[in-house]
Image 1: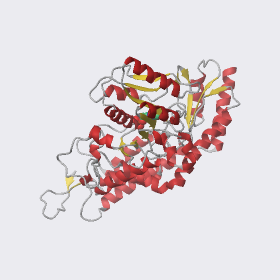
Image 2: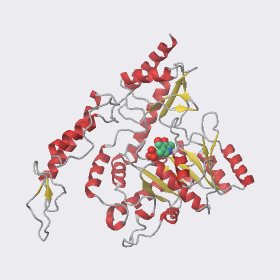
Image 3: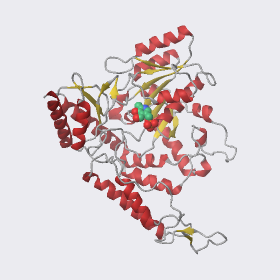
Length: 477
Ligand SMILES: Cc1ncc(COP(=O)(O)O)c(C=O)c1O
């Protein structure tokens, strides 16, 4: 590494540059830097090649060579960096492989890849308006649009967060404060057995004792029952226990079930209890007319977690907490930013949530929504639901127990005792180029397919079902 000899007028410090290939350490402010452009083009080519090569590989790589985790003494040159990157990428999960069906991690939307690059280059900070003038305004505008599109009301808005776990935590912090329980270690959160495990984490972080999360037994299909919640609220009253919130789920992690949101919202409204909907998976359905029925009632919630990183395919991380009354965010997390100028367009991003410095996650979400348009969102969602229906249809004649679901997840088990069938079938599927995940529900080993991958065709579903059938036949012998 040497320092380049070009100097900025008025600056004593030389601009650092890499000595071979002309890759600058920092992008020059003095005209387009061909070294930077060349490197970005090569890195883009590497990525495009990697994405395009997915069909040559399985969705899930075996063990691969890893580049060194430690920095070298003198720093590495551009060509060596690209080789290291290539090596690392060879060991990556390939989300755009048509058989990548294991988790809620679809291929990234193309424009969200570009937006991530631009956001990294801009390196603006959503902590405060002065550090991200246009992006802060965009973030405020987009959060308000999303919250209002879900039906949360004319004042509704929210804040991006680095994942659904954090969105859920922030929702419960707001709910506790709104219930007048801030600083209290008392309080109960009522939810379903199938609600996401991030709720345990949230309550732990909030200092609530184990047992503060009441996971109620579900109905026969796995959904939270409004009458069970009503009974639990009654027990809380009898025992003098304050309630922080009821948490419903719009899209459970294993089955993709949507709790009866309308009934739960009516109940919570009558009881004056905060309803949070963990819609990390399914809330996105509330954005478009044709799919809204899947999450009917979501607009009556007090808060909603929505993860565009899941069904929509915005690159990670992309999650939001949206609230009917966003003032709760400021009340819960606003501390004043004494080292920042006042915000002109509303409140600083750092006053609206747990995170301080934040990257411009809003950029990829905005660009993705702009590119898709409402029709594109609708088509994308409809495709995922059609594939899930298609797989259910193909699995129906087989000796399987296919669990009910409301979204694009299909979980199933062998009828009768498993006796190693699930793991054997999983292996066979992997050999055939399909990766499903292996969750368990109430101790029952399951296979789960998430049909959010637009590259999975009917032919792939035929092949997948044929492999499952073979595995069922093999298990009988
Ligand atoms: C229903 C639900 N809520 C919350 C989460 C947590 O989201 P994240 O992994 O982004 O923290 C998940 C993750 O899969 C989920 O399925």
